[in-house]
Image (cartoon, rainbow, N blue to C red; front, top):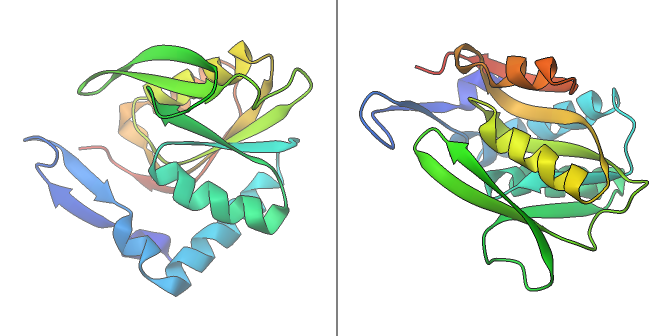
Length: 175
């Protein structure tokens, strides 16, 4: 199955000049969603890890299903002030501004190797912030699996240059 056929492209969203890649059309199709999860599970076999983590919010959709199949713990990386216990926080740049991401301090241990799953990588800023949170928690980043890579925005290349392993299911231009 060609998963690309199940991604909707929306011009000028969230701002003029942006071509948004919408995964809601993929996840509402049970066959496409199942195939996507199966492909993530297959790609995840290339990594050595004992926990999964995902970035709020679309990454949760994919990582929770993978966590269930693989019987691996699932760590939530959330926006600021969404987690109730003590957190590690990191501020980072987005294409459209700045943001803060957090993880519970007790979610990741020193010996943990964490595979990050997200729906999309663009410039790599959010993915890099996720790695910083894992490393602040004394864990190791096993690598990343993205559903979509917006290849001309350079996020995967940025992560690879920093020494991270990266897999993605679909390549699209970012603009």
